[in-house]
Amino acid sequence: MSSALLTRIWTTLSERLQLEKRGEALWAMVVKTWYLGFTSFGGPSVHFQIFHKLFVEKLHWIDEQIYQELFGICQATPGPGSTKMLFCINAVHSGWFVGLLAFFIWSLPGALGMYGLSLGVARVNEVLLGPVYALLTGLNAATVGIIALAAVQLGEKAITDKLSRLVVVVGGCAGILYTALWYFPVLLVAAGIATLLWDFKVPQRTIKAVHNALSRESTTEQPPNPDHGPDIELQPVGQLDSQNSLGVNGKQDDTSIAVPAAEHEEPRIVPANIRMDLCSWQMSIVLLGTAIAMLVVVLVLRGVLTAPPRGLSIFANLYLAGTIIFGGGPVVIPLLRTYVVAEGWVTSRDFLLGLAIIQAFPGPNFNFAVYLGSLATMGTSLPSAVGALIAYLGIFTPGILIAAGLMGVWTRLRSQRWLKSFLRGVNALAVGLVFTAVYRLWQIGYIDAEHSVGQPLGNDAWWVVVTATSFVTGRWFGLNAAAAILLGGVMGLVWYGAVKA
Image (cartoon, rainbow, N blue to C red; front, side, top):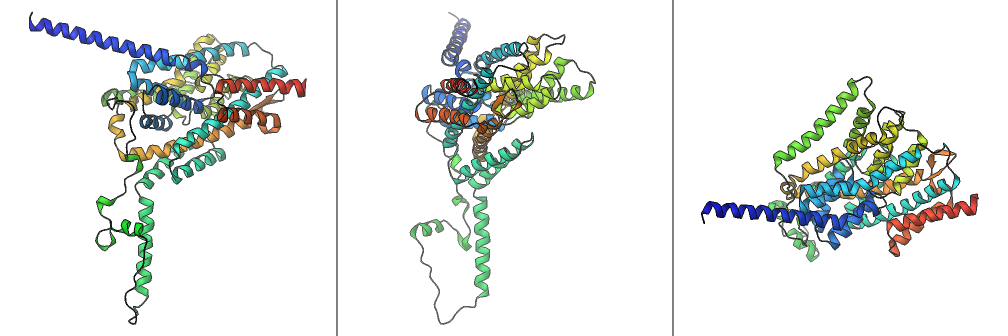
């Protein structure tokens, strides 16, 4: 048998084996994750907790270190946070194709449900029945409790020292006090810089240098006393040990520079050969360049055309929203209100009804765009299903392209100490913004026929009880998010029967 024939046989077998491996990976993804799009209630904050329990603790597809790194990437880049997280996890474990298919399996159930909801909302009366408002308010109140629980659980992992605890608090307060499109990216960058400087001891060294300079000045101002010998300061042993690392003239040697905590690798529970650079750097540049080029095109068309087609306007507005939104689903809601309701495409009532439903709907909150895209094309020559599809592609495309582009070069980046320190601050600030989302949803959760824009849940003590119930049952009794939200809806109907009926 010739060597050429043997080589051909070997190549064929290798290719066949690779296809079998890909098929096994694809089947494993479908079996392990198909239900997430139907059962992941509570929004992105809860989704991150679900992904951690499934992929880190149960399946061991990634370890804690990679999870935290991916969490930082998804929070520091625009687009749907939990959707990018699911895509990246599956892409790291099984490759690009499996990651992309996981994205569709994850997002399509909720997208189809929101499209069906839009068809129903378009045919209902202007004022809904009282029990419907009570049901929706109960769902909203329970969702707020679930998100608050997710914020606490995420904080337990993101807070590693006093600085990260301070970043969480400052992020939550800053997000409550002010909201703007440019504001959240600035907060995330500022938090990353703060932890970067802290981990590399820049503030500590500056304070020590100032203190030493002041000490030298005070020493030179006092003349020496000839009646006394040199003063000897007694110091604790630990303090003496820390000073032993100083070189001559009180200067610290380069070898004694403190190493950031982020440099130390955590124990891995998966093989170290997991590849996070899923393509070449050239392909990464192509993906990132495509995202930017599409943004430029839609902005130009949006500004040049005086009367653009409704489909183009929807795609342009939602692609722009998906490109500039940091912080995930809770942040996208007010922006979509500006881009859709202000355009006159959707009424305030329909927007508020969809908002109440999406909070208690499984899957990504960005599916709210499907609902709005469908309503925006009703009454036009464009079918509502086409409008929903355009909105779906517009809102999800930029985030997925940017995440995929960064994943292509992440192995080269993740070895940098400064980047790990930077992402530590980004993670902590992102957790603070989850508490901001709790406040924002609390302020508009109570809806009825008289308040078309919503009112705070605290206006009625019963909704406070519903929120507390979902938090407590999830925290100490193990009730999952879906059951807790359903319980909130039932409690809303009970309230209507006891108070309104």
